[in-house]
Amino acid sequence: MTVLEVLNPPRRHRPLRLLTWASVALVAITAVGLLADSRILTGVPIWLKPFKFSVSFVVYTWALSWMLSVLPKRSRVAEWAGTIIVGMLISEMVVIVTQVIRGTTSHYNESTPLNATLWSIMGASIMVLFLAQLAIGVVALIQRIPDRPTAYAIRLGLFLSLLGMAVAFPMTSKQTGIDGVAGAHSVGVPDGGPGMPLTGWSTVGGDLRIGHFVGLHALQALPLLAYALGRWAGDRLDELTRARLVLVTGLGYGVLVLLLTWQALRAQPLLEPDATTSLAFAGLAAATLAGLGLVLSRRRRTAMVTA
Image 1 (cartoon, rainbow, N blue to C red):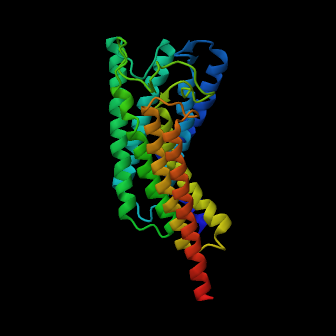
Image 2 (image 1 turned 90 degrees about the horizontal axis):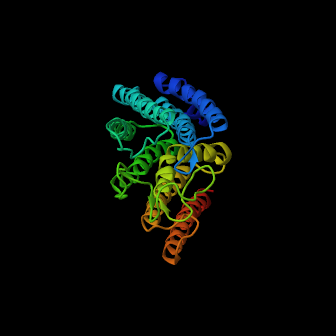
Image 3 (image 1 turned 135 degrees about the vertical axis):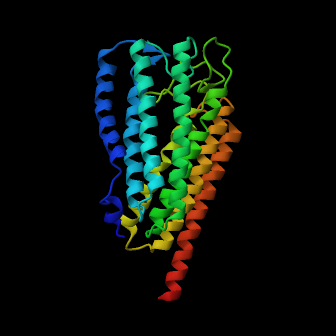
């Protein structure tokens, strides 16, 4: 399988593909909401949450559709799991948009029976989605994908994305002391305080959304790395070396997700780590670079021996 065949496979999962285009349309609709609706909720424009979720749905559903199409054999389990994921994403977005229209929050909101019911629907949808993606990950492990860098990228991407989902679970168990609020994403400070532009991540306390975000997007980052290595270094690096580079990067990526979550749980803003956190990040960077260097040096020694 060539790099171009990997990037542009002939078979796509129709429900995921349709949801991708629907999410593109929703990005435009929510962008209009950002411009036309001046309401502020938890310190940010009220349409910002559905806008960010729409963008996330675009890249998530496209990547998942691509991954399913790359599998060498059609898997009924994986395709059904993809369809279930579509249903769960739609239900989640319906709740988010409904609550925006009603002028209230969707996440952690148990202030009324209706709000509690909608939040329960979201929570159940996320759990079902998690299990459906886990099923796709198991199928990807079982099947033999011919291109090894792509195989490593897909498998690591799927499971690190699940890790990103899992590190968000502490948000739902946080005790806020506020009636009708069943969780929070900020640590050490109330939700809705000063935040970074666009993302809204807290600049005065920890924020569990950071590790969640980084973990989720392993689904796109690692396949893009595998493609870039094949596209621009395929003539210099053999397939095994590129696969090892993806593996080392993926392992470092996973540790990064855990470190970002650890930092948030210790109530530290992303850009204001203490000495211990900074040392941990430096250690991760050094270990990852050393691993990448070891892979490349091993490749050079092998090339010299075979020359």
